[in-house]
Image (cartoon, rainbow, N blue to C red; front, side, top):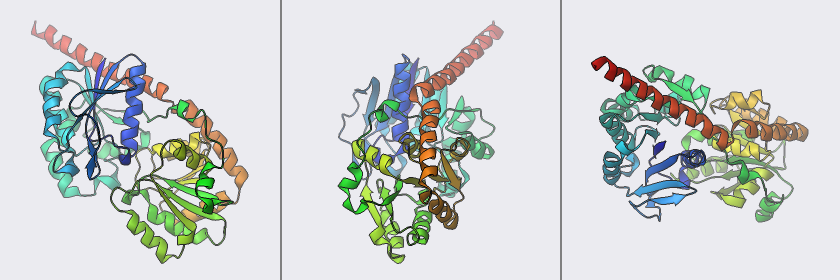
Amino acid sequence: MKILHVIANLAPRYGGPAKAIMGMARSLVGLGHQVTIFTTNQDGPGVLDVPLYKPTFHEGVEIRYFPIQNPRYWGTSFSLANALRREIPNYDIVHTHSLYLFHNWMAGMYCRHYRVPFIVRPHGTLDPYIYQRNRSRKRIMELLFENKNMKSASALHYTTEEEMLLARPVTFNSKGFVVPNGVDLDEYANMPEIGGFRKQYPELTEKKIILFFSRLNFKKGLDILVDAFSKIHQQIPDAFLVIAGPDNENYGEKVRQWIGERNIGDKVLFTGMLTGTKKLEALQEADLFVLPSYSENFGISVIEALICGTPVLISDKVNIWREVVVHRAGRAAPCDSNAFASEMKDLLSNPQICDDMGERGKRFVANYYDWEHVGQQLEKEYQSIINGRKKKSMSVVGMSN
């Protein structure tokens, strides 16, 4: 198959979607398919230092970058639109990522025009919490193109059953399938020695690390986390909160304000974005990973923590919470600081429970979220859509004869 993925950006600062699409594409290349990604060079207020227009290759995946232009928040790129107009007829199937962005409009329009089957991946934008934000602006985009895309797409791609259930009221009964994100298990096969993270940050020596590892963003529940930590830090005096992740929107200023109001600044560390060995060190050495998001369609950082053997405490708005709880790899709580404080206190006071969760978490991820297995699931869904389109075309031809 010739497969085209279309996404607004691939810069690491944008977190899960950019990381997931690369794993997805690599897994399909590994199965013998030709996979291309069309995207822009957007990187926050700047741009990525990448070649424009011409193909680049990363682990067998062809990537074409096109220049971002104003309005940037919409992912606008007319050169990307022109490339989609020229190239979409050359692909067997197109997979678009996120909603309410310029590339969705263009890809959907040209897929319909050339009758190329396409899949829409909402990336959590249809979760009620996110769906209602900026509703008037989104409503305009729905009338312009997004409703038409959902109605005419071959399928909507969800990463959890929970995401599909939450989206159902606003998707016009469109067909959907569930294939999760994955992890590259080889990346975690040779972990760094224990102690590197604490050595880099001496204030963490002999401390119990509560790790938040995600973008600093309004939906991530950092207000819940800061308030919950302020409730337990005196009862567990060796607890230390580490906030690791990119701050694309200066949201960290609000977080620091909440920390200052509670006089816990000497118990909180901001590391910025961590990658490579530093990321693995942080995930491995954390005593507890915490993500109290108000909305999270998957939560790739949760899976990364689990494969490192770290127990997780997540909100029941992180859509893999049921799977985590069923496999006893972590706990879930409502988006409430008292509930999180209670769970954090209990887990940090019971290291054996945490150790057992960590071992179960590693087995859980290895069994369900290996990219090779995920790629096989995607391949099956793609082939089913393409075969269905061919059968429909043949029946139309037969009727006309």
